[in-house]
Image (cartoon, rainbow, N blue to C red; front, side, top):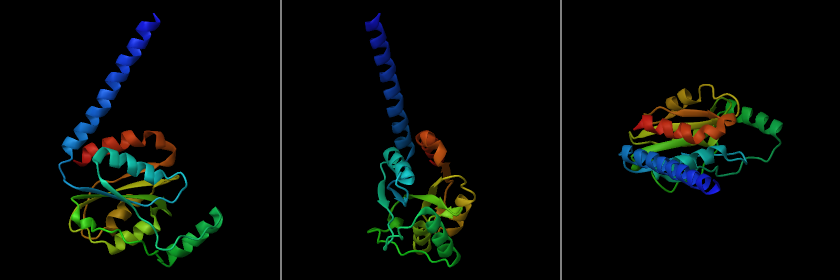
Length: 191
């Protein structure tokens, strides 16, 4: 009886593995867009946006670059950081970012990942969007929100310079266990 159970579990595992590999191959076959780039910023220690970027990279075989402020943000407690952020936002005082070391327009499809700050993209992504010409290439946003993603995707769309903005996706941190399946479904609709 025990031997049959072990064999049954092994068979189920083989079928599940085959299904996962098949989904990955299907996405690769559907992705006839050429070279793919993922640009993202993450701030939290949990790295929620970075985790989503890694899932996306695994599904697309994309190059990936983390956007970094040229000068680190001040180390403040949460309440003081929120107050500091409101001041930055009101003054549109966006931070300089480190050089990417490449031209995003040299890619065929660009994904941009951001945490949602004050209902909008994070400050480093704001800087990226202000200073980057995407060369008419397709650009899609994935955003991670603590509680409310509000209008982050439409705000993102209004800020992209010379890019074809594609349907984006926003996640709430509470739904993080479903991120991979949601990204997979989102990608299948993009190409």
